[in-house]
Length: 470
Image 1 (cartoon, helix red, strand yellow):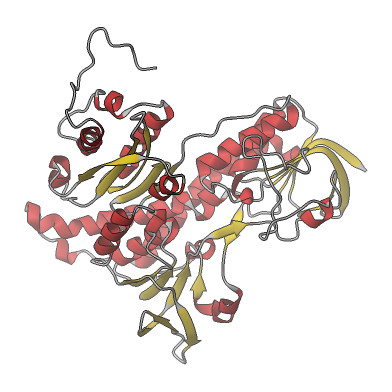
Image 2 (image 1 turned 180 degrees about the vertical axis):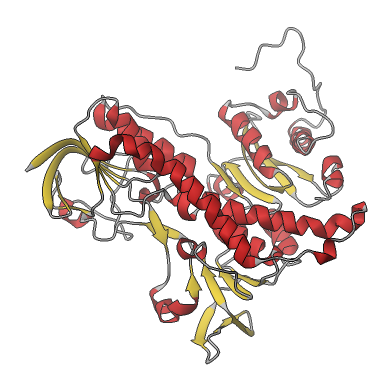
Protein backbone atom coordinates (compact mmCIF):
# COMPACT_ATOMS: atom_id res chain seq x y z
CA UNK A 1 0.00 0.00 0.00
CA UNK A 2 1.52 3.32 -1.10
CA UNK A 3 2.15 5.89 1.62
CA UNK A 4 2.31 9.69 1.22
CA UNK A 5 3.35 12.48 3.53
CA UNK A 6 0.37 14.53 2.34
CA UNK A 7 -2.66 13.84 0.17
CA UNK A 8 -4.63 16.86 -1.06
CA UNK A 9 -8.18 16.12 -2.20
CA UNK A 10 -9.25 18.82 -4.65
CA UNK A 11 -7.33 20.94 -7.16
CA UNK A 12 -9.30 24.15 -6.89
CA UNK A 13 -8.06 27.44 -5.51
CA UNK A 14 -7.60 26.11 -1.98
CA UNK A 15 -6.06 22.81 -3.04
CA UNK A 16 -3.62 24.41 -5.47
CA UNK A 17 -2.47 26.92 -2.85
CA UNK A 18 -2.02 24.10 -0.34
CA UNK A 19 0.03 22.15 -2.87
CA UNK A 20 2.47 25.03 -3.30
CA UNK A 21 3.10 25.08 0.46
CA UNK A 22 3.43 21.32 0.73
CA UNK A 23 5.86 21.13 -2.22
CA UNK A 24 8.25 23.47 -0.38
CA UNK A 25 8.91 20.71 2.17
CA UNK A 26 8.21 17.35 0.51
CA UNK A 27 7.83 15.75 -2.91
CA UNK A 28 6.04 12.75 -1.41
CA UNK A 29 2.57 14.20 -1.90
CA UNK A 30 -0.44 13.52 -4.10
CA UNK A 31 -3.19 15.81 -5.42
CA UNK A 32 -6.46 14.02 -6.20
CA UNK A 33 -9.19 15.55 -8.37
CA UNK A 34 -11.60 13.84 -10.74
CA UNK A 35 -12.28 17.08 -12.63
CA UNK A 36 -13.22 19.20 -14.35
CA UNK A 37 -9.99 21.06 -13.71
CA UNK A 38 -9.60 24.82 -13.63
CA UNK A 39 -11.12 26.08 -10.32
CA UNK A 40 -14.69 27.18 -9.66
CA UNK A 41 -13.69 30.83 -10.04
CA UNK A 42 -12.21 30.48 -13.52
CA UNK A 43 -14.73 27.97 -14.91
CA UNK A 44 -18.12 28.91 -13.51
CA UNK A 45 -17.70 31.66 -10.95
CA UNK A 46 -15.92 34.96 -10.49
CA UNK A 47 -14.38 35.36 -13.92
CA UNK A 48 -16.99 34.34 -16.54
CA UNK A 49 -19.65 36.14 -14.52
CA UNK A 50 -17.60 39.34 -14.66
CA UNK A 51 -17.32 39.00 -18.44
CA UNK A 52 -21.09 38.97 -18.97
CA UNK A 53 -21.49 41.74 -16.39
CA UNK A 54 -19.00 43.89 -18.32
CA UNK A 55 -20.86 43.29 -21.58
CA UNK A 56 -24.17 44.16 -19.92
CA UNK A 57 -22.83 47.33 -18.31
CA UNK A 58 -21.23 48.47 -21.57
CA UNK A 59 -24.51 47.97 -23.44
CA UNK A 60 -26.58 49.61 -20.72
CA UNK A 61 -24.36 52.68 -20.75
CA UNK A 62 -25.32 53.35 -24.38
CA UNK A 63 -28.81 54.29 -23.22
CA UNK A 64 -27.30 57.41 -21.66
CA UNK A 65 -25.65 58.49 -24.91
CA UNK A 66 -28.41 60.91 -26.03
CA UNK A 67 -28.08 62.79 -22.73
CA UNK A 68 -24.42 63.53 -23.44
CA UNK A 69 -24.86 64.30 -27.12
CA UNK A 70 -23.98 60.96 -28.75
CA UNK A 71 -26.53 59.80 -31.32
CA UNK A 72 -27.18 56.48 -33.01
CA UNK A 73 -27.43 54.24 -29.96
CA UNK A 74 -30.91 53.12 -31.01
CA UNK A 75 -29.36 51.07 -33.82
CA UNK A 76 -27.35 48.90 -31.44
CA UNK A 77 -28.63 45.45 -30.58
CA UNK A 78 -27.52 42.44 -28.56
CA UNK A 79 -26.46 39.26 -30.36
CA UNK A 80 -26.79 36.84 -27.45
CA UNK A 81 -25.03 34.00 -29.30
CA UNK A 82 -21.97 36.20 -29.78
CA UNK A 83 -22.21 37.36 -26.18
CA UNK A 84 -22.02 33.79 -24.92
CA UNK A 85 -19.23 32.93 -27.35
CA UNK A 86 -17.27 35.88 -26.00
CA UNK A 87 -17.94 34.83 -22.40
CA UNK A 88 -16.76 31.27 -23.06
CA UNK A 89 -13.73 32.48 -25.00
CA UNK A 90 -12.46 34.52 -22.05
CA UNK A 91 -13.57 31.81 -19.62
CA UNK A 92 -11.42 29.29 -21.49
CA UNK A 93 -8.48 31.70 -21.34
CA UNK A 94 -8.83 32.00 -17.56
CA UNK A 95 -9.02 28.22 -17.22
CA UNK A 96 -5.89 27.80 -19.34
CA UNK A 97 -4.14 30.24 -17.03
CA UNK A 98 -5.00 28.04 -14.05
CA UNK A 99 -4.12 24.75 -15.72
CA UNK A 100 -0.86 25.78 -17.40
CA UNK A 101 1.33 25.71 -14.25
CA UNK A 102 -0.06 22.27 -13.39
CA UNK A 103 2.10 20.67 -16.11
CA UNK A 104 5.13 21.12 -13.83
CA UNK A 105 3.75 18.66 -11.27
CA UNK A 106 1.65 16.22 -13.33
CA UNK A 107 3.45 13.29 -11.69
CA UNK A 108 1.77 14.28 -8.41
CA UNK A 109 -1.77 14.44 -9.86
CA UNK A 110 -4.30 11.61 -9.83
CA UNK A 111 -7.54 12.42 -11.65
CA UNK A 112 -9.72 10.03 -9.69
CA UNK A 113 -12.30 10.19 -6.92
CA UNK A 114 -11.09 9.91 -3.31
CA UNK A 115 -12.89 8.44 -0.33
CA UNK A 116 -11.90 7.98 3.31
CA UNK A 117 -11.69 4.35 4.41
CA UNK A 118 -10.30 5.32 7.79
CA UNK A 119 -8.49 8.18 9.55
CA UNK A 120 -5.29 7.78 7.50
CA UNK A 121 -6.49 5.54 4.68
CA UNK A 122 -8.04 6.55 1.36
CA UNK A 123 -9.48 4.81 -1.66
CA UNK A 124 -8.23 6.73 -4.70
CA UNK A 125 -9.77 5.31 -7.83
CA UNK A 126 -9.18 1.58 -7.30
CA UNK A 127 -6.08 1.99 -5.13
CA UNK A 128 -5.78 2.05 -1.35
CA UNK A 129 -3.25 4.54 0.00
CA UNK A 130 -2.26 5.95 3.38
CA UNK A 131 -1.10 9.43 4.35
CA UNK A 132 0.26 11.19 7.40
CA UNK A 133 -1.70 14.37 6.63
CA UNK A 134 -4.78 14.84 4.45
CA UNK A 135 -6.14 18.15 3.15
CA UNK A 136 -9.76 18.18 1.99
CA UNK A 137 -10.37 21.03 -0.45
CA UNK A 138 -13.21 19.70 -2.58
CA UNK A 139 -14.99 23.00 -3.13
CA UNK A 140 -18.75 23.43 -3.46
CA UNK A 141 -21.63 22.80 -5.83
CA UNK A 142 -24.95 24.58 -6.50
CA UNK A 143 -27.92 23.71 -4.33
CA UNK A 144 -31.12 22.56 -6.04
CA UNK A 145 -33.92 21.51 -3.65
CA UNK A 146 -34.90 17.88 -4.30
CA UNK A 147 -38.61 18.67 -4.99
CA UNK A 148 -37.45 20.88 -7.88
CA UNK A 149 -35.58 18.13 -9.70
CA UNK A 150 -38.72 17.22 -11.65
CA UNK A 151 -38.42 20.65 -13.30
CA UNK A 152 -34.76 20.06 -14.25
CA UNK A 153 -35.23 20.69 -17.97
CA UNK A 154 -36.06 24.33 -17.18
CA UNK A 155 -33.46 24.86 -14.45
CA UNK A 156 -29.93 26.16 -14.84
CA UNK A 157 -27.23 26.93 -12.28
CA UNK A 158 -23.97 28.80 -12.53
CA UNK A 159 -22.34 25.44 -13.30
CA UNK A 160 -24.42 25.23 -16.49
CA UNK A 161 -25.31 28.84 -17.30
CA UNK A 162 -22.13 29.65 -19.21
CA UNK A 163 -22.71 26.71 -21.57
CA UNK A 164 -25.91 28.24 -22.95
CA UNK A 165 -25.60 28.80 -26.71
CA UNK A 166 -27.76 31.90 -26.44
CA UNK A 167 -29.67 33.75 -23.74
CA UNK A 168 -33.30 32.88 -23.01
CA UNK A 169 -36.01 35.42 -23.79
CA UNK A 170 -37.28 35.30 -20.20
CA UNK A 171 -35.93 34.02 -16.90
CA UNK A 172 -36.65 33.90 -13.18
CA UNK A 173 -33.64 34.25 -10.91
CA UNK A 174 -34.23 32.31 -7.71
CA UNK A 175 -32.07 33.69 -4.94
CA UNK A 176 -30.66 37.23 -4.92
CA UNK A 177 -27.40 36.63 -3.14
CA UNK A 178 -24.18 37.71 -4.81
CA UNK A 179 -24.51 35.33 -7.78
CA UNK A 180 -28.21 35.95 -8.31
CA UNK A 181 -28.01 39.74 -8.25
CA UNK A 182 -24.96 39.81 -10.53
CA UNK A 183 -26.33 37.50 -13.22
CA UNK A 184 -29.93 38.64 -12.90
CA UNK A 185 -29.10 42.29 -13.33
CA UNK A 186 -26.77 41.55 -16.26
CA UNK A 187 -29.44 39.54 -18.07
CA UNK A 188 -32.00 42.29 -17.53
CA UNK A 189 -29.62 44.87 -19.02
CA UNK A 190 -29.07 42.63 -22.04
CA UNK A 191 -32.81 42.59 -22.76
CA UNK A 192 -33.83 39.33 -21.10
CA UNK A 193 -37.22 39.64 -19.39
CA UNK A 194 -36.12 39.02 -15.80
CA UNK A 195 -37.98 38.34 -12.58
CA UNK A 196 -36.16 38.10 -9.26
CA UNK A 197 -37.29 36.00 -6.32
CA UNK A 198 -35.72 36.01 -2.88
CA UNK A 199 -36.53 34.64 0.56
CA UNK A 200 -36.40 37.78 2.66
CA UNK A 201 -34.95 41.27 2.08
CA UNK A 202 -31.20 40.52 2.26
CA UNK A 203 -30.07 41.21 -1.32
CA UNK A 204 -26.39 40.25 -1.78
CA UNK A 205 -26.14 39.57 1.93
CA UNK A 206 -26.87 43.12 3.12
CA UNK A 207 -28.04 43.09 6.76
CA UNK A 208 -28.55 46.83 7.40
CA UNK A 209 -32.34 47.37 7.19
CA UNK A 210 -32.03 50.90 5.79
CA UNK A 211 -29.73 49.67 3.01
CA UNK A 212 -31.95 46.63 2.42
CA UNK A 213 -34.92 48.90 1.76
CA UNK A 214 -32.89 51.26 -0.44
CA UNK A 215 -31.34 48.53 -2.60
CA UNK A 216 -34.69 46.75 -2.95
CA UNK A 217 -36.41 49.96 -4.07
CA UNK A 218 -33.73 50.71 -6.67
CA UNK A 219 -33.56 47.14 -7.98
CA UNK A 220 -37.29 47.02 -8.59
CA UNK A 221 -36.91 49.95 -10.97
CA UNK A 222 -34.96 47.52 -13.20
CA UNK A 223 -37.08 44.36 -12.94
CA UNK A 224 -39.80 42.98 -10.64
CA UNK A 225 -38.60 41.34 -7.42
CA UNK A 226 -40.57 39.22 -4.95
CA UNK A 227 -39.37 38.55 -1.41
CA UNK A 228 -41.57 35.69 -0.19
CA UNK A 229 -40.00 32.78 -2.04
CA UNK A 230 -41.30 30.84 -5.03
CA UNK A 231 -43.53 27.89 -5.84
CA UNK A 232 -42.69 25.96 -9.01
CA UNK A 233 -45.90 24.67 -10.58
CA UNK A 234 -45.32 22.87 -13.88
CA UNK A 235 -43.60 22.66 -17.23
CA UNK A 236 -46.21 23.72 -19.79
CA UNK A 237 -46.86 22.11 -23.15
CA UNK A 238 -44.89 24.98 -24.68
CA UNK A 239 -41.91 24.01 -22.47
CA UNK A 240 -42.33 27.08 -20.28
CA UNK A 241 -41.78 26.99 -16.53
CA UNK A 242 -44.88 28.10 -14.65
CA UNK A 243 -44.37 29.40 -11.12
CA UNK A 244 -46.01 31.48 -8.42
CA UNK A 245 -44.35 34.47 -6.75
CA UNK A 246 -46.25 36.81 -4.50
CA UNK A 247 -49.88 36.41 -5.56
CA UNK A 248 -49.10 36.16 -9.29
CA UNK A 249 -48.52 33.32 -11.74
CA UNK A 250 -45.74 33.65 -14.33
CA UNK A 251 -44.31 31.66 -17.22
CA UNK A 252 -40.66 31.93 -18.25
CA UNK A 253 -38.25 30.07 -20.53
CA UNK A 254 -35.73 29.18 -17.82
CA UNK A 255 -34.98 29.52 -14.11
CA UNK A 256 -31.53 30.33 -12.77
CA UNK A 257 -31.28 28.61 -9.39
CA UNK A 258 -28.91 30.77 -7.34
CA UNK A 259 -30.02 29.65 -3.90
CA UNK A 260 -26.48 29.05 -2.70
CA UNK A 261 -23.68 26.52 -2.94
CA UNK A 262 -23.00 23.67 -0.54
CA UNK A 263 -19.72 21.90 0.32
CA UNK A 264 -19.02 19.16 -2.21
CA UNK A 265 -18.56 16.27 0.20
CA UNK A 266 -20.79 13.67 -1.43
CA UNK A 267 -19.38 10.13 -0.99
CA UNK A 268 -16.20 11.49 0.61
CA UNK A 269 -16.55 8.99 3.45
CA UNK A 270 -16.45 11.32 6.45
CA UNK A 271 -18.60 8.76 8.25
CA UNK A 272 -15.63 6.37 8.17
CA UNK A 273 -13.60 8.75 10.33
CA UNK A 274 -15.77 7.88 13.37
CA UNK A 275 -16.08 11.53 14.36
CA UNK A 276 -19.07 13.78 14.98
CA UNK A 277 -20.67 15.45 11.98
CA UNK A 278 -23.14 18.33 12.02
CA UNK A 279 -26.52 18.47 10.28
CA UNK A 280 -24.77 19.29 6.99
CA UNK A 281 -22.45 16.30 7.30
CA UNK A 282 -19.43 18.44 8.18
CA UNK A 283 -16.92 17.91 11.02
CA UNK A 284 -15.91 20.66 13.45
CA UNK A 285 -12.92 22.72 12.23
CA UNK A 286 -10.51 25.09 13.96
CA UNK A 287 -10.79 28.04 11.57
CA UNK A 288 -7.33 29.42 12.46
CA UNK A 289 -5.44 26.17 11.78
CA UNK A 290 -8.02 24.44 9.52
CA UNK A 291 -7.50 21.10 11.32
CA UNK A 292 -10.44 18.91 12.30
CA UNK A 293 -10.94 19.14 16.05
CA UNK A 294 -11.44 15.37 16.34
CA UNK A 295 -8.90 14.34 13.70
CA UNK A 296 -6.09 16.95 13.77
CA UNK A 297 -4.08 15.31 10.98
CA UNK A 298 -6.92 16.18 8.56
CA UNK A 299 -7.56 19.71 7.30
CA UNK A 300 -10.74 21.10 5.74
CA UNK A 301 -10.13 24.18 3.59
CA UNK A 302 -11.87 26.49 1.13
CA UNK A 303 -15.52 26.24 0.14
CA UNK A 304 -15.59 22.69 1.50
CA UNK A 305 -15.84 23.99 5.08
CA UNK A 306 -18.70 26.42 4.30
CA UNK A 307 -17.13 29.23 6.33
CA UNK A 308 -16.14 31.95 3.84
CA UNK A 309 -16.77 30.70 0.29
CA UNK A 310 -14.80 33.48 -1.43
CA UNK A 311 -11.73 33.02 -3.62
CA UNK A 312 -9.19 35.01 -1.60
CA UNK A 313 -10.38 33.26 1.57
CA UNK A 314 -10.05 29.87 -0.13
CA UNK A 315 -6.49 30.74 -1.12
CA UNK A 316 -5.69 31.81 2.45
CA UNK A 317 -7.16 28.60 3.81
CA UNK A 318 -5.15 26.53 1.35
CA UNK A 319 -2.01 28.29 2.55
CA UNK A 320 -2.89 27.67 6.20
CA UNK A 321 -3.71 23.99 5.66
CA UNK A 322 -0.71 23.40 3.42
CA UNK A 323 1.70 25.08 5.81
CA UNK A 324 0.39 23.25 8.86
CA UNK A 325 0.50 19.91 7.04
CA UNK A 326 4.29 20.06 6.63
CA UNK A 327 5.49 22.40 9.39
CA UNK A 328 5.13 22.87 13.10
CA UNK A 329 1.50 23.90 13.53
CA UNK A 330 0.78 27.63 13.54
CA UNK A 331 -2.38 29.56 14.35
CA UNK A 332 -2.98 32.18 11.65
CA UNK A 333 -4.99 35.38 11.94
CA UNK A 334 -7.74 35.66 9.35
CA UNK A 335 -8.12 38.71 7.16
CA UNK A 336 -10.88 41.25 7.74
CA UNK A 337 -14.02 40.07 5.98
CA UNK A 338 -14.44 41.56 2.49
CA UNK A 339 -17.36 40.56 0.31
CA UNK A 340 -18.27 42.30 -2.96
CA UNK A 341 -21.15 41.82 -5.38
CA UNK A 342 -20.32 43.19 -8.84
CA UNK A 343 -23.81 44.50 -9.37
CA UNK A 344 -24.29 47.99 -10.77
CA UNK A 345 -23.71 49.86 -8.50
CA UNK A 346 -21.49 47.49 -6.52
CA UNK A 347 -22.75 46.09 -3.23
CA UNK A 348 -20.27 45.23 -0.48
CA UNK A 349 -19.91 44.25 3.15
CA UNK A 350 -16.67 44.86 5.03
CA UNK A 351 -15.61 43.77 8.50
CA UNK A 352 -18.53 43.22 10.85
CA UNK A 353 -21.97 43.66 9.35
CA UNK A 354 -24.74 45.69 10.95
CA UNK A 355 -26.57 42.62 12.21
CA UNK A 356 -23.40 41.05 13.64
CA UNK A 357 -22.80 44.17 15.72
CA UNK A 358 -26.41 44.19 16.89
CA UNK A 359 -26.24 40.52 17.83
CA UNK A 360 -23.07 41.18 19.88
CA UNK A 361 -24.71 44.19 21.61
CA UNK A 362 -21.83 46.43 20.52
CA UNK A 363 -22.50 50.14 21.01
CA UNK A 364 -21.75 51.84 17.70
CA UNK A 365 -22.68 54.81 15.53
CA UNK A 366 -23.45 54.73 11.82
CA UNK A 367 -21.76 57.24 9.54
CA UNK A 368 -23.87 57.72 6.43
CA UNK A 369 -23.60 59.19 2.97
CA UNK A 370 -25.78 59.13 -0.13
CA UNK A 371 -24.19 59.08 -3.57
CA UNK A 372 -27.22 60.83 -5.02
CA UNK A 373 -25.85 64.31 -5.58
CA UNK A 374 -22.23 63.33 -4.91
CA UNK A 375 -19.91 65.17 -7.32
CA UNK A 376 -18.07 62.41 -9.19
CA UNK A 377 -21.20 60.23 -9.23
CA UNK A 378 -23.03 63.05 -11.03
CA UNK A 379 -20.26 63.27 -13.64
CA UNK A 380 -20.35 59.49 -14.20
CA UNK A 381 -24.18 59.54 -14.48
CA UNK A 382 -24.24 57.00 -11.66
CA UNK A 383 -26.10 58.80 -8.88
CA UNK A 384 -27.18 55.79 -6.88
CA UNK A 385 -26.00 54.32 -3.62
CA UNK A 386 -25.54 54.65 0.11
CA UNK A 387 -22.61 53.92 2.40
CA UNK A 388 -22.96 53.08 6.10
CA UNK A 389 -19.82 52.93 8.26
CA UNK A 390 -20.07 51.41 11.75
CA UNK A 391 -17.74 52.86 14.40
CA UNK A 392 -17.27 51.86 18.04
CA UNK A 393 -18.58 54.55 20.41
CA UNK A 394 -15.79 53.99 22.94
CA UNK A 395 -12.70 53.51 20.80
CA UNK A 396 -13.89 55.29 17.63
CA UNK A 397 -12.40 52.40 15.64
CA UNK A 398 -14.09 51.45 12.38
CA UNK A 399 -15.76 48.08 12.91
CA UNK A 400 -17.41 47.44 9.57
CA UNK A 401 -19.45 48.84 6.72
CA UNK A 402 -22.13 47.98 4.21
CA UNK A 403 -22.68 49.81 0.95
CA UNK A 404 -24.14 50.13 -2.48
CA UNK A 405 -22.06 52.63 -4.41
CA UNK A 406 -20.52 53.55 -7.76
CA UNK A 407 -17.04 51.98 -7.80
CA UNK A 408 -17.95 50.42 -4.46
CA UNK A 409 -15.40 47.66 -5.01
CA UNK A 410 -12.65 50.25 -4.43
CA UNK A 411 -14.32 51.86 -1.42
CA UNK A 412 -14.69 48.38 0.08
CA UNK A 413 -10.94 47.74 -0.20
CA UNK A 414 -10.06 51.06 1.44
CA UNK A 415 -12.38 50.29 4.34
CA UNK A 416 -11.02 46.75 4.70
CA UNK A 417 -7.48 48.15 4.89
CA UNK A 418 -8.51 50.77 7.47
CA UNK A 419 -10.18 48.13 9.65
CA UNK A 420 -7.16 45.82 9.26
CA UNK A 421 -4.92 48.62 10.56
CA UNK A 422 -7.28 49.27 13.52
CA UNK A 423 -7.73 52.87 12.38
CA UNK A 424 -10.15 55.17 14.15
CA UNK A 425 -12.62 57.37 12.34
CA UNK A 426 -10.39 60.39 13.02
CA UNK A 427 -7.22 58.73 11.72
CA UNK A 428 -8.98 57.69 8.53
CA UNK A 429 -10.44 61.15 7.91
CA UNK A 430 -6.91 62.57 8.09
CA UNK A 431 -5.71 60.44 5.19
CA UNK A 432 -5.57 62.08 1.72
CA UNK A 433 -8.74 62.41 -0.37
CA UNK A 434 -8.49 63.84 -3.87
CA UNK A 435 -11.19 65.88 -5.63
CA UNK A 436 -13.35 65.01 -7.46
CA UNK A 437 -13.46 61.28 -6.74
CA UNK A 438 -16.07 58.83 -5.52
CA UNK A 439 -13.86 58.30 -2.44
CA UNK A 440 -15.00 61.72 -1.23
CA UNK A 441 -18.23 59.96 -0.33
CA UNK A 442 -16.23 57.81 2.07
CA UNK A 443 -14.87 60.97 3.71
CA UNK A 444 -18.41 62.35 4.06
CA UNK A 445 -19.55 59.16 5.81
CA UNK A 446 -16.52 59.33 8.11
CA UNK A 447 -17.30 62.96 8.93
CA UNK A 448 -20.87 61.96 9.74
CA UNK A 449 -19.65 59.20 12.05
CA UNK A 450 -17.20 61.61 13.71
CA UNK A 451 -19.94 64.18 14.30
CA UNK A 452 -22.01 61.52 16.06
CA UNK A 453 -19.00 60.43 18.13
CA UNK A 454 -17.67 63.93 18.94
CA UNK A 455 -20.43 66.50 18.37
CA UNK A 456 -18.10 69.46 19.00
CA UNK A 457 -15.83 68.32 16.14
CA UNK A 458 -12.06 68.37 15.77
CA UNK A 459 -9.31 69.31 13.35
CA UNK A 460 -8.95 67.12 10.22
CA UNK A 461 -5.19 67.39 9.75
CA UNK A 462 -2.40 65.64 11.61
CA UNK A 463 -0.49 68.06 13.83
CA UNK A 464 3.30 68.07 13.63
CA UNK A 465 3.61 66.47 17.06
CA UNK A 466 0.92 63.80 16.50
CA UNK A 467 2.25 60.23 16.71
CA UNK A 468 2.38 58.32 13.41
CA UNK A 469 -0.37 55.90 12.55
CA UNK A 470 0.59 52.51 13.95
